[in-house]
Structures are given as C-alpha cells and as structure tokens.
Image (cartoon, rainbow, N blue to C red; front, side, top):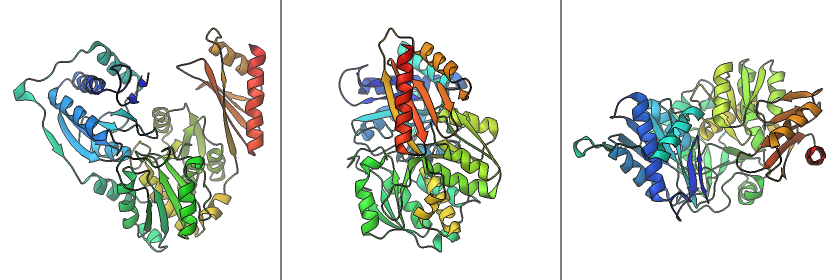
Length: 460
C-alpha cells in the first residue's frame, strides 16, 4: 500500500489499485474534495486556483486530471505548467487566487507523485483544514457544476519571471555585489524544474551556470533527496570545472544544498545557518527552526544578540512559530529556507540569492565561510517496538529520567545536554521511536543514539 493521506495532502505511487496507490480515481477524488472544501469555506462556487507541477514523468497526467476536475466543480484554473513549489506559493496571492495545488512528491523517487494544498495566502493548509478535506474525500460529498457553469482554464508562462523579480527587489539581496564576483556555479537540478528556474535567477545575478542534470524530463539520475551519498557527480564536477561552488535542489526546489569549491558538502543543516548569519548580522531579530535541526542556528543567533526558538517538526509548525515570534528568518535543517519578507514557504531561489549576497560581502570562499560556523554532527537511529508496547508511556519515562536537563515536549521528547542533544519522536504509523542526535563528533552523536536505545530498552 503506497497511498498516504495526511493533513498536508495526498501522496502515493502511480498505478495499481484504487485506494492503494495514487490512481486517476484517487487524484480526481482528492482534487474534488479540496475544491469542494474551498467552495464551502468561502461560500462561493466561482473560485480561482493556481496549479503548478514539478517535472516528474506522471506530472502531465496528474495535472490534466486535477485541472479538469476543478473545472468540473465550476472552479477557474490558472495552470503554471512546469513550476516550483515556492513559485506556486508566490503566484497564489500575486493573482489574488483562492488557493493552489502543487503537484510534486518532493524528494521521493520518480514513481511517486502528490497533491499539496495551499490556502489563499499561498501557504499550506493547517491540520484542522486538512482533516476536513480528508473527510470530504472519504464521504465523496461532491456537487459538480452544470455545463453552463464549468470553470475556465488558462495558462501562464511568466511565473518564474515574477518570482525572480520579487527576489531581486528584496533589500537584503545585493545584485551588484554578486555581479562583481562573476561566480561560476555548478547546478544539479535532478532533471526537474530547478533546471529552468535556478539558471534564470543566476543569469540575472551575473553568474555563470554549469548545468548538471538540468533537463526537466523527470528522469531522476540519482536519488532526488539532496544528501551527500547521492551527490558524487556534482562534487567531482565542481572540482573539474574549478567552480566557486555547487548548488543542489530537490525536484520541487524547496530544499537547497551546497557544495564548496573543494567538492565537499557544505552541510544541508548549514544552508539555513549561513543565511541566518547574514540576516542577523544586519538586523537583530528572531530565528526559528524545528526541534530536529542543528544547534548551530541557535549558536549563530546568540553571536548576533538575537533570539532563537524551536518548533515542532513540519513546515506548517515552523511557519506558525515564525508568525508568533515575528521571526526574520526560519526554516528546517533539510536545506529549507523560509524568508517571510518574500513569503512563508521554503524557497531555494531566495536561499541562493541571500547566500550569494552573504558570500560576496564576506569576500571568502565557501569553505572559509563554512569554517566560521560551529562544527556539529548528526545521527539518526530508530528503535522498533512490538505493537503492545505503549510508546507514549516510554517517552514519559524518558522525560522523567532526564528531568534535570533542559527538556522540551513540544514534539516528542527533546533533551538538551551541555554539549549535545537527543530528540525522540514516535512514528504515527508504526510502533517505532525515531532518535535524532547531534554532537561535536560523529562518533559522539552515534554513541548518544545507542545510549538512548539502551535506556529505552531498560524501561521495557
């Protein structure tokens, strides 16, 4: 079974049986549910929705199904075609639309696709709204329009231009400082839409782009999640081309990873750290990440007499806390940059522009810049439990065991020690506790994870 229904949308593998995989019927049902929910919520039928997709092979088919379904409800559709997640998010308020749907399975392999749902602000719908959409889909409570009231359909091909111009107009993006450096940058866009959007941005910033896997055909040449073990090709090409650094994005361009001039990973966690360093250096403010992100962001905020707060895991939770604290920068340790002066969504394009400005003004190489930041290493482990074990009870026991340390229960149990931390989160779908650790060496991070597994087992 590869169909996952959640508050943020529906995701699954193409083909197979209805309700087991992401079939055409599932796409139509879920698009109908979201369109109907918006009509009910806004108490009107003639809405406008923005649709955009990444380049995965099934995108065209899923796009046709979604657009036609919405038209069948009487909803007007503006189809951006090949796009990015942040571009769709920006175009919803830009066109005064009532919402949007992004067709992407993000970093999942090519057989996956998904519908991600946006409100009228171009932000992901919240948990309560998502539950209502799921209930509508389950009940198939839809009322389609009669022939004279079908929705209209139009396409737009200027969305990237609008998105990029908004980035160039940001006061904290110094276009002239970047142009003066004539940076040479290798780009790995995993044959998706980043191969269109990022070169357009880099061209406007006076950079030379060496393209690697930038043909938007959906044939991912490697695992599309931008992790070190998948990025050997770009690391080699940066050295061969004597480039200043490399840029890596995932298929929907909301995660940004960097490779230094020596072909070494900058570290996904440190994309946000570097951008926050630049912004907080120029204006005291608040920085936000989630509980499983690196402590380095907290450390950098402290050096600039700024505050740091951590949210529960999940982009919606990060955004909610950013709004509550009026943060000037936030995001997630997976390379997701959220810059609210542009919009409340993870955006690799604005991340590239802010990072380039920082790099140009510091007048350093990427490896020199990375050396400025605290060195932390992360570990990820899990402990599989039998179904009869009460996972919540175990987490409560762990909280009490370490009550003399700094403990957060916002999302699972996070224990902050003086030199390291551990975050324990239960799976929502199976009896598993996921264990995230961070320390000043990889060995220490792994040892801390093993110690936590042993402690949990002692309570069973």
